[in-house]
Length: 310
Image (cartoon, rainbow, N blue to C red; front, side, top):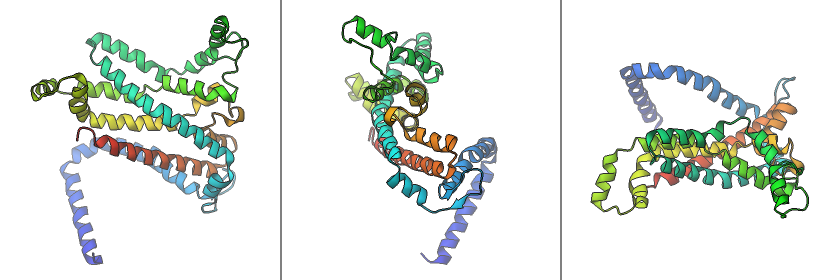
C-alpha cells in the first residue's frame, strides 16, 4: 500500500470515528469521567512504569537510562526472582483454574436455590474474599506451637508427636498458602457468574428440551456457557489477576521474606525492591514483566473460551 493510499484511508477512518463520536456524544459524555479516571490512574502509571524500567532510579536522584540492564539482571543474575517466578506459577497454575471452576460451579448450584436463600448463600461464599482479618484466623489455625488448631487436633488424634512449623518450615509452607488462597478465591468473578446466570432467558432451556437436550450437563454446555461468554471472560481475567497477584497472603502468614523464599512471589519481590530498597527502576522492570505475563495468559484463556459452544 502506497503512502498516499494509507494517508487517505487513515483520514477516512478518523472522519468516521469523529462522526460516530458526534452521533453518540451523549453516551461518550457519560463515559468521559470513567475514561479520565482510567487514563489518569491506570494507563498513565503503566506508561511511567514501563519508562522507569529502562532506567536506574532510586527516588533521590534523577533517573538514569540504562537500557535493558534491569531485565538482564532480573533474568540472568537474580536467583531470588527466579524462585519467585517458580512460586508464582505454582500458585497460578493450581489456584487459578481450581478457583475459576469452583467459582462457576458454586454459582451454578447457588442459582438453583430460592431467591432469599440464594442471597444469603452468595454472601457466605463471597465473604472470604473480602475478609481482611482472615489472615489472623489462619495464623492461629496453622500456628507452629501445640496451641495451634491443626497441631492440637493432629496431636490429640495421635498423628503427630510434636508440633509442626506449618508457616516457617519450607516443606509445609506452600501447601498451607495454596489452601488459604483457594479459600479466598471466590471473588468478583463469582459475583459475575451469579449475575450472568440470573440473566439467561428461561425460554432457552425450554427450547433446548424440545431440541433434544437430555440432562443438565448438556444444558450447561449448549445453553448456559454460550450465553455467559462475557461473564466467563471477565471471571477469567479476575482469576488470572488474583492468582498472579498473590503477595499479601504469603507476607502475612509466612513472613517477609519467607523462610528460604519458599513462598516468595513476584509481587513480594516487587514490594521488596519498590517499597523497601527504593530501587524503582528495577521494581518497574518486575512490574512490567508481571503485566506482560498476565496479558499473555489472559489472551490464551480468552481464545479457549471463545470456542465454547461453537
